[in-house]
Image (cartoon, rainbow, N blue to C red; front, side, top):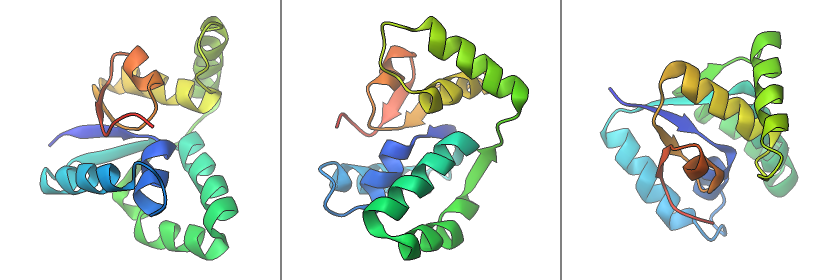
Length: 136
């Protein structure tokens, strides 16, 4: 079974019908479901997703996401060691605009040997991850 790193950009594209990448996100997600891919997301990306869903679609949408979608995720909870490794990577990459949340995902991808990401953020390309989904 494939294991795929999930980014906030993909979740928002999937759930927000007005998002420019919505149709592509739906196709990519359906492909992942058919493959029975295991979806891996960091707790930092999960927090970011809740914050953006709450702001853009309201708390009811965030609650539905929690009930209906979060159970599909294998959440990697950020502890001090993971946070520090992500901080080191983020600060080391001064020329890139990837966020600390992205850096946390990159560390997890490397630690867990993940090679594919469900993401619409080109920073994942920079890390050598093949993306399910395209560019925003």
